[in-house]
Length: 114
Image (cartoon, rainbow, N blue to C red; front, side, top):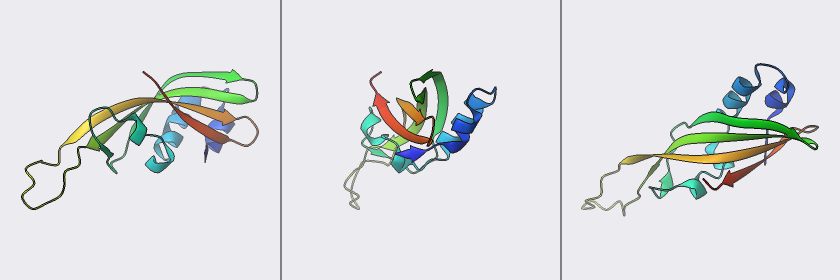
């Protein structure tokens, strides 16, 4: 779980989408299920990722937001000196759901099927 206190504070304001986007992009990639969302590569790189807010709603006790995440992955080779596989980054995309607790800002992140 992660915490998104700035997004909780901004809920209901015109700035919410921008605040949420920035706060998601500041998370450590290890806090997100990006590895499970890979479709054309085998390992998530440490390059920064970008978030796009798709939808948001309020439900009992939480704020639910869906976000598209653009990130990069690589097909990992054996790293041998004679390995013919070049390190080639692939653009990846997945959709994550962020359930933000309305009291604590504790946030559950779930990978959604496309």
